[in-house]
Image (spheres, protein in one colour):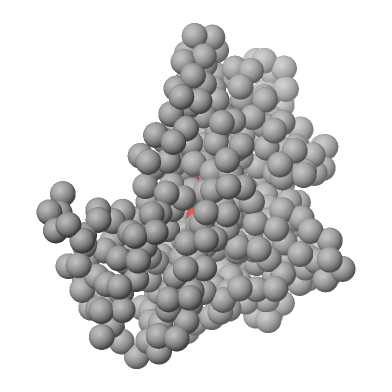
Length: 381
Ligand SMILES: *Cc1c(COP(=O)(O)O)cnc(C)c1O
């Protein structure tokens, strides 16, 4: 604990205070799930899936073990085969490309838009070849990618769209005709994660898939469950990926708060925006007109200052910050065999050196945020 009276303990994410605010509901839900002893596929799993489907306004929600699995299950259910090309932004969390590589598909990287941090749709079409089977847009930091353009291109070239919605659950995509859909329900399959720090976080691992097509949903259920529809009859090769009953019970409680949580994150973001919009060395997050933002991260770009020095100085003042992500995927050692080199994706490379994410969570106290803002401004000088 820092002893200085004007120095509140600042955390990147505050899951403890969030828990304490809903402790009774959560504790009851966990106790009930344990009392029922249906630890796998208990009734809470079905109920949570139905409630989330209603929230997302999609036909099927299929729960699974984590967000990475959700992506893998999607590619397995769509019967993507070794050698098939899958287009993916290079500025994202590794999971998106990892499952592509794991299934021996070929990740085809694309640079991102410098403002939205999402896949640059102007560079998308030139990546399409006769081997391309799917596009995986990532709704990074909490804002939807330009889905209307992506869907149009996908339809033109007969490609699947698998949305990585791990960071944007609850965000609304607004079509040009004014119609709204939840990010993650527009492509053939949407994938999300319930990792504890995500906007809808469990108390352990969890994930889910969003599907509107009945047949594809049935296939996905089989893939996630050892390739079986009837127990011990394995029609296809699948895997084992499930959401625990206890996690589903917790998530049912937290889903009721998701809109409040996302609103709280927006309040924090607006306060940061106001404080930093006129600071010359900082670029506040860009808001696309086709998406609401759920601020999984509040990510600034620094201008004409050294990001790492800035981060270190903040840390000395007791302000944590994070870099999402310090190395773009094409420059990661594990992905060096795909033939990319430094300079291939200049926007993402520049972002890896200039982005910095500030503390962002649902429990941010006003005085804590004022303290963060004061120290950020002081550090910049
Ligand atoms: C968190 C995350 C994932 C993976 O989710 P896990 O539940 O940790 O497997 C995938 N993609 C993105 C963009 C993420 O942020």
